Amino acid sequence: MSKYTQVEREGLYELTDAARTELVSSRFYNEDLAPTSVSQRTWTTYNITALWIGMAVCIPSFTMASSLVVLGLSPWVAVFNVILGNCIVLIPMQLNSHAGTKYGIPFPVFSRMTFGVIGTHFPSLSRALVACGWCAVQCWIGGMAVAAFVGAFAGGFTEMAEVNLLGAMVSPAFLIGFFVFLAITLLVTWKGSEGIKWLQVISAPILIFLCLGLLVWSTVLATGAGYSIGDILQASSDTALVNDSGGVFFGFFAGLTRNIRVWAPFDSQRTTL
Image 1 (cartoon, rainbow, N blue to C red):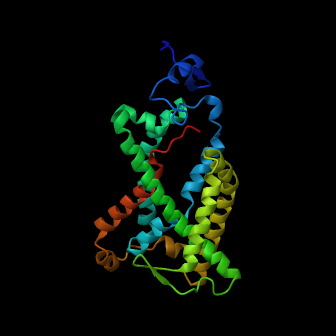
Image 2 (image 1 turned 90 degrees about the vertical axis):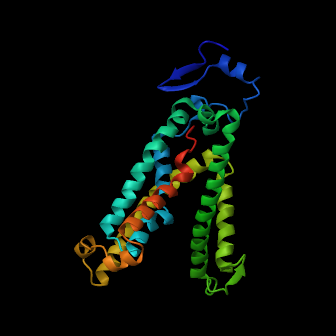
Image 3 (image 1 turned 90 degrees about the horizontal axis):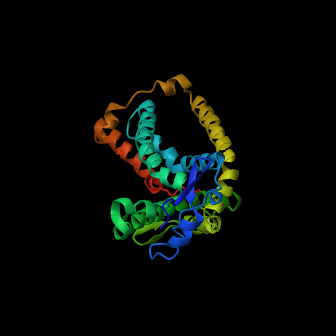
């Protein structure tokens, strides 16, 4: 192996042609896990920002703080809980993404430093399983949106009788919506990260405007019910409801764990973009 295996290009590193040629013959090398070249990392700052917007602006994110308010915590405590959870998980996410961003090394290879060549299969597969589960959650919520959208134009669609599926009450309308949304997801991801990149380029500005629209809608809804913005901001925790929900300690740390858990599928995300 050559003494120098990498070359720097504008602060980023990639394998030299000589090093790559030598590595091709290794049994530990394959094209899918090979370090990406600088030219292959086509994601700009805007693309990565758009990706973060797409991951953060979703229905599960909206339910983080609202679910804590339902448990009796005040809006300010609920918002602080979300901010704290995101700050905690931000540190390992940034550290974990450094190798991929700067050196083009994918996570399964990067984790060999800790788990070894064989042991790296465990964190890699565990990430994949968690990601599959999270994709299913997102597709179910997206499927509900699809069903609601179709129901707005086809009366009675969302009112289809519920049936028992694997012991759970599942609406056929939501089930159809789930598979439609899943098909759309597969179509977008068919081209890998490039397909996701262009979806985020288009969707990120739309999501920002939708959030602003949601803010206006919720403000009008609250003021229409007789509450001012000041009333909402000054709302305190409901002691009785908090106690019924397990107490402040349980509610706060359960919410904190949930906020961290939501980002688990992205924690060791490969950022060789």
